[in-house]
Image (cartoon, rainbow, N blue to C red; front, side, top):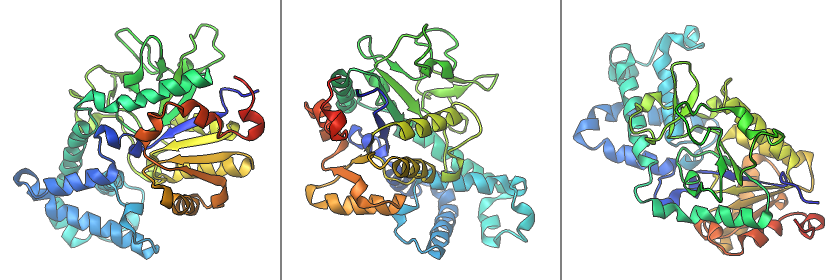
Length: 360
């Protein structure tokens, strides 16, 4: 009998691109364009130094394809680490900062901090839906859930609200916050399916890196807002940047990471939509799950042409160090996949044959 843990969905930045929300690489392009304008020109030389240093460090490891290691998350994380200066654990081992960096960073590295804040303030706008109807294709999740007839498990690496737009009385999405009320504090117990007092939703949404409509209250709790981050300063948004900060020792991030690991070990299909395999922690958990269960399948939906399916599978296999035969690539885009009227059947057909023919 198929169970509600058989299929999990992992959403990456590519899932939202066709809703006119830029992916990480596109955000870099926006930053570089902004640096040409008067109000950001003062950060231009600092940016070029930081970017060239990141590229140099990656080259020492034999990685030269810039899309594999450089994006807005890496940039913001690097600026954050530089900003720590003497508070960084490796500071005692640094004999001196590069003189060029000191010159560009200004006193106490204030220019680094301001540059980072400026990027975060811009990011708030980048991940907003200017025209909400552009994200209507995410309603395909409703079609999928109706066919499966059990709650979807959706793990999102995105800060945007494309999935949340699907929430309604007929398709309730549990994201950890009470639907109404003044506090709306995140509570892990809302994800507890064994809780008899909890109404079962149509989908559980795990925003693994944070969300544009989150903020922290005076007690350091994560709370949900209605202003979509408009009134929250960029550097106060509880968003996670940088590959080695994805597993923060605090909730909801730690809880979500645990849930992702648990669900990957228990499922039969990991359906990745728009994920570029740039997160080392996520890749390791996917790899561990696939090695644990030989029958498990990794299915990739992204911006892939039919003739590029094998190349895509080989590339993903190299990122997670697994046999490409364990990976299935569905050609097309996230939008074309989610808008497919037969999405329910297509997804259930991904299950191992002994499970796919069992009625739900």
